[in-house]
Length: 50
Image (spheres, rainbow, N blue to C red):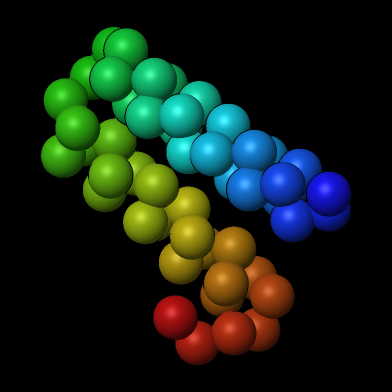
């Protein structure tokens, strides 16, 4: 039962992210670039090397 919930949760997250990216008001390349910049910024803030 827990595994079924986890799989449904992960599927829902992926579906939501896909829909959000599909309807983004800017090109995908710019969106991906901004996302990676945020990841690097947060990793740097946390002391990780990304």
